[in-house]
Length: 137
Image (cartoon, rainbow, N blue to C red; front, side, top):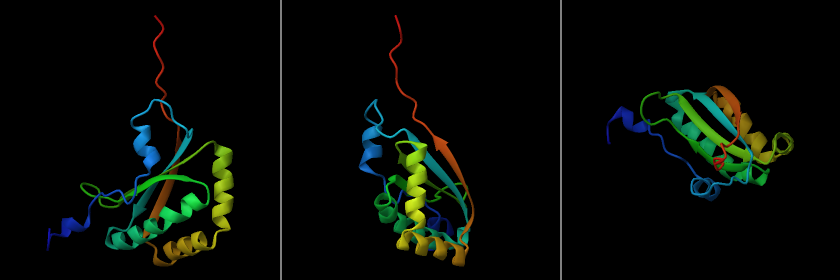
């Protein structure tokens, strides 16, 4: 809505991977660990965070993460954003983090976030999918 301050606060997925879409329709998950990153962002720098998130859309897969997407605030809380990235194991996550630290584009994106200070804090939670099992008769 033009002129509406709340219009700048919209929860939109910047990208959702085809794998996540297929996971919603299948019982078997090919990835076993998902890292959910919860960002507390400066709501007045939402566009800067969105730019940061868009850059990860190509960097993360190139470094070995299965990126499900980044989400921006829309309604309600205007300072929480999320990202979800899956890995086959925690050791795969650690290998990914090492590759990310050595990636030129990744380092530049981290530096931009540090310089502009639009991320106030972040938390990582590691999740595993709930598998569907048949009940014993």
